[in-house]
Image 1 (spheres, rainbow, N blue to C red):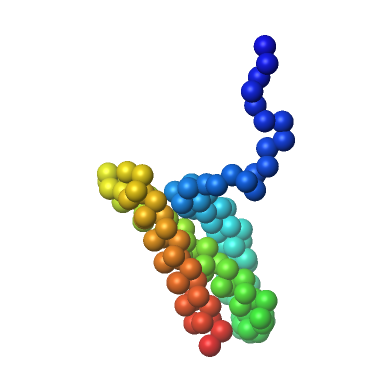
Image 2 (cartoon, one colour):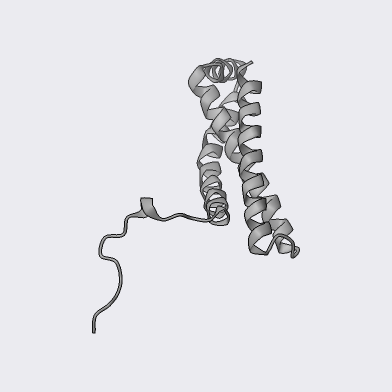
Length: 125
C-alpha cells in the first residue's frame, strides 16, 4: 500500500488564510506575554525594595534596549487584546463566515500595526 504524502514539506510554500495567521499570532503573543511579564514582575519587585533600587530600575528602563523591550511588551499586549476581543465577538456568533472572518482578521492585524507604531512613537518621543 503506497501512501500519498509529501516526503519533504516546504512550509514556506504554504499560503495560510488570514484567519489562521490571526489565530497563530494570538497564541504566539500569549506565550510572549508570559515571558515579557517575567521582566515586568522582576522590575516591579526590584523597584519596590528601596529608593536606590527604584532609581536603578528607573535608569535601566531609560536605555534604548529597555525601551525596545517595553515596546515589544506593549505591542504583544495590544495584539493579544485585539485578538481576544475578536475571538469574543466570534463566540457571540458574529464573523464566523469565511469572508467576514478573513475581513475581521485582516482588520485586527492592520489595527495592531497602527497601534504598535503609535506605541513606539509614544515611548520614544
